[in-house]
Image 1 (cartoon, rainbow, N blue to C red):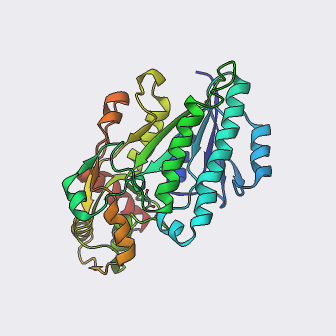
Image 2: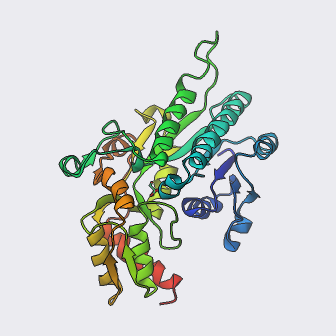
Image 3: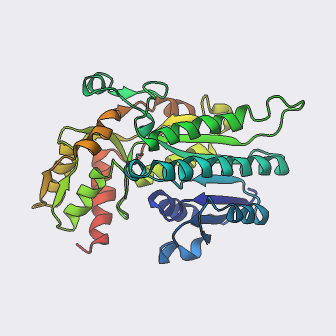
Length: 337
Ligand code: SER
């Protein structure tokens, strides 16, 4: 197998950290990572890490000059709740940095005479159901349905999906000769639950927050109603899906944008789970009507049959395994229970 150079942006974030752990053992991979923050101590040795802002053109030029990337995981983003407080910042971080990286990957595809793979985490936030009645009627949403986002985060993810397709299929479409274009692939993730890190700034955070607070014996006020339901998956499956899509033969892919999910849970299901696992956990529902309204536009579940058909996607963790084999075991270690 030839050696490859992999870039991970947003590397100090939740998915970034998990992806580094999973790629670090691979001797054929040179890992280059970027984030506004340093990596946690235990990951410092695992990559060449740059602390800096992707919007800084000098940083991008330096990376481009120094490395020939074969695969890019562009994870850096402002999440949905934070983005509502600062939409312009979200636009810059979520879309401008994506365009700059797509441009860089396009130049490198041409220099290397082969497509650079560009993996992009999109989200259930690209969907926007108009009301709860519709949400309850259309339980498992397919990729082309209801793509009417109501958040800046959702808008930016949907736009990046579209320009990713543009750079892969149509870039320089009027030129005399077809250029070598990059190979963009995106996953629409549900809420993600990690046993090791707590999310921040997202609107699906109520699920993982509830479990982590319960494990630490801290009371938790849930910011959505008990009946609010969206899909979720645990971090190992999220990372597996990213790597599976990166490795999938191009000829098997019928689209560049795939839903992936594992299970659909209501906030009450999370409460039951947390209280069964950590008896005595104090969890109250104190909905924040505005944050809740965002989650109400997200689908109760998504249909990931395209990923299952095209690249054999299947989550390893159903809800029971996720709890027993992943969350409980690792969270207990994390908090020395
Ligand atoms: N987890 C993200 C958020 O809540 C959605 O993809 O912002």
